[in-house]
Length: 136
Length: 243
Image: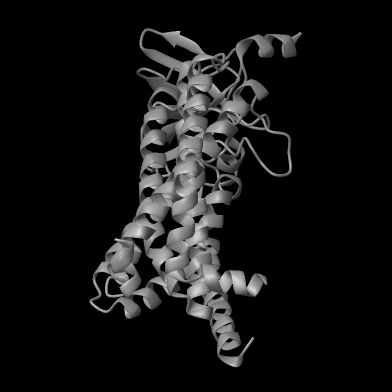
């Protein structure tokens, strides 16, 4: 390989090195700000004022869902810590006990008042017949 | 021998004639594979145990997302070849791939939004995966408009190649976004290291649809690169004979 081509390759590597370290520094300094939601355990560790709108995510604790008219209350858990949530409105079809959920709202005296509730599903896909077999 | 082959293939003329030979075969093959997989996936697989029938958009969403990232990688590779060896054909390929990449990214974003409504309960959220894919789409559009803003093709090619290489940093970020940060989007079902977390009855049509979609995009890139060669080499004598 002649000298010009070698120099061009070094140039590319140098540009890549600088831009990767730049991007890395940006991502590093943004750190948790890029997280879409807090888990209940992360929420315990930090002080969040009641007028700050946040998202919390985790699993719906089984047996915790209670409906009263259009108001629904449930517990979001990461199986270490958990938090009580109340919400007035319609939840997505995929909202179920023991499945993923993300709630957007305000933390008021240890109770999370949600304005929006989204369902989060995992990466497993299978037909219902196989799922029944796995359970037994 | 290999060197001679590469040198020959790198000439737009040989490329055009060679591609012409395989184009129809790839097109018919991938159309058949894609539609067979689509019909298989839509009609002959059971519904998902959580998402019901709405999971079936996977046969469009996953191939489109996969291709949107792969096309960017191939664009960056072509840019590298152009910058180091100054192969003209590589420069033509860079600008030919960009609109096809923008198209597949657009399909990925749209199908993802449509999928999000019945499952997540929202069509758009600023989570790391969705936002980085939007950045990919905007980058494709930026590269296309940058190239067309130059009157001098050679300058445009050089700048485009450099930017395409720098922008390639976004691809691993998209790929790993679901692992590095908490996102609404689920993590990958098919990985190189682990057993797929998708049932084989759904996996086979998915792989088929990815192969088919891949072939269709290759054909689109071939058409787009032919157009590019015609414009850029229009004064060459062989083009006049060809047309």
